[in-house]
Length: 298
Image (cartoon, rainbow, N blue to C red; front, side, top):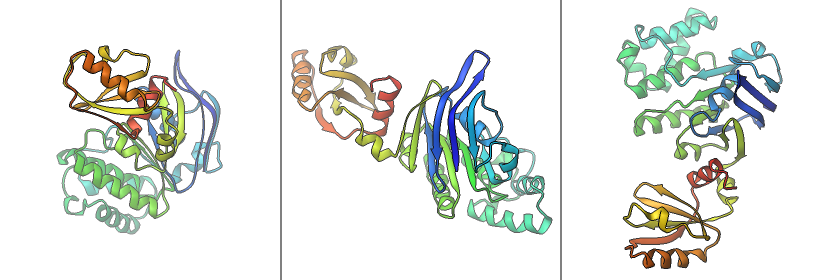
């Protein structure tokens, strides 16, 4: 459905996307994950036809010319880009008109979409008066007015409260079950877990691409979860068996080469006079995988 072969994009001397090759299949929820500046937005904009690659070849629905297939694409950018001085319904009607739909078709589709996104009771409210979560639902509704085959969303839930995030993803799942292929970038690891496959990007390159389960299974190290209150934990664990020590909430994830390192970590901390509240081996999380990829541990 979407195929990129050695695609790159330059912004002058800055390489936004660097030699990325990947295929996205019909019916997937495909996630793009990575830190700020990783190249996620540039990649989505190239797939949407907003930007042209500097090098490489890209095919979307079999076409290399994005103008041919734009009517089959839906796009929700990072920044809310609809009209705040218009009501929810007026924004939706405007988008329908821009796609060349007739009045009756617009009204029918608008009611369907507003009901789907739970915005029907707020159709007369100005977009500027919506909450962050409701604005994202409006952006979602606007992007669906023309029934796209491929829906591109660039960090659609950033800054949205947890309840609205969950509702938003429930809507994405419903769209996917109805046959829409979804490509979404996200900084949230719990959202990455909801994708059928995830591509991790770093410094413009694609570091890895696989299902969340496979990414965790292919993680070549072991993870120890440590609870101990001391600001110098990392300095104490500068020992050969420890590869990394990262803070996760009020705990630490200690990355080691094998399970036998647990005893060495325990003895090292006890020798330093630290009170260990808990120390155990746990399965790696996606965040462990992505931290490792970003720091080039692999």
